[in-house]
Length: 234
Image (tube, rainbow, N blue to C red):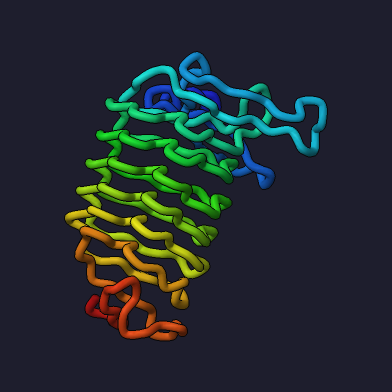
């Protein structure tokens, strides 16, 4: 009886807080927010007859919700990509949750999502493409995974409320204008060795750049900005 009451209580909490409960391979409870209904998306399934290579893509978001949870699966097939322009100008959306199955976000996917405030890119995504978060003017926090190796041009351009960002260790290239006109960008911390030294990455922005103490390949200037060694104080 006690176990039944506990189960019902957990189920009730799950429903109230919008979480689906499931178990992982080790039998542990695992949680993921209840996905936004599929009726709000357009999507495609590729290679549907091949169990080993089939995957689902979100091609377009056709609603304008305040909060969006991208589904992990569509028809039991993993969602691995968000197409280019999929959320273009979703003006009311302020938060989005990505599934861990995601490994590709298309160019301009969130271009001009003016109310978007925070993004956490899942492990597996290796490239932030052109203009992906262009003019997300209220974006304050960006968390990049260790798998990121490239940030394309204008990826975060005109994100006027972005103040700090940490660049993962594996990153090798940031293209021109990736962080241009980020007027309030104060610090950029590089965890790894120096990426390719490309001009105008921070055009119209004035951040202080920091590098890890044990990193290599750095010169005094990177993309025209002075580079300081990160210490415990900064």
